[in-house]
Structures are given as C-alpha cells and as structure tokens.
Length: 127
Image (cartoon, rainbow, N blue to C red; front, side, top):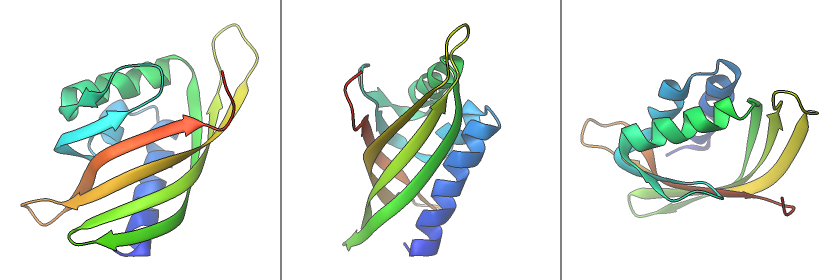
C-alpha cells in the first residue's frame, strides 16, 4: 500500500465525518475488520462498526483530521501510525477538540482492494 493510498483513506475518514456518513466510514473496513475505540467494547464486522461510527457521530463528532506519521509494510499488511484531531460538538454543550494517536492495520482483500483489518485509537489526555 502506498503512502498516497494511506492518505486517501485518511481523506475518506475526514469526508465521512464531515458528511455524517457512518456507512461510508464502515465501508473502509474489511468484512472481518475490527474497530477498537476507547470506552466501548470491540466492534467487529460491518454492522457493529457502522453502529459504533453512528454512535460517534450522534455524540457530536463533526470534523476529523487524520495525519499518517509512519507507514510500514509487513508482508501483505500495511501498518499505519498517526495522529488525529477530532472536533466534537455535543448538543447543549461547548465544542471540544480531542487530539490523539492511532494504529491501523490495512489488509488486501480477495477483490484486490485494501481495507482496514484493525483500528485502535485513543486521546492524548484523559477524559
């Protein structure tokens, strides 16, 4: 997976949050992909991942900037480490900006595409 392809996935995350499109966000993951957000249990597969993405959008996620910092190839896998800035506008509360880090593992699929196999992130500061 090239750096340009990793950047395209980062842009797709940005666009999915900006467009409030949980289905588009979930489509970035493999059928057996795992989304491991803080504060809730692991989400596996498209239905659970889309539900978790919708939960994030419903809590006020309005913007997401993803910055891949390091991309490594490991056999067929691509391992990405980066930073993110998440803009949250909770209803009835002041906007919040969360800054954190993430690790994503990309895996080639049978159809020739590459999708996210594992995705874990957390904030740089405690809640």
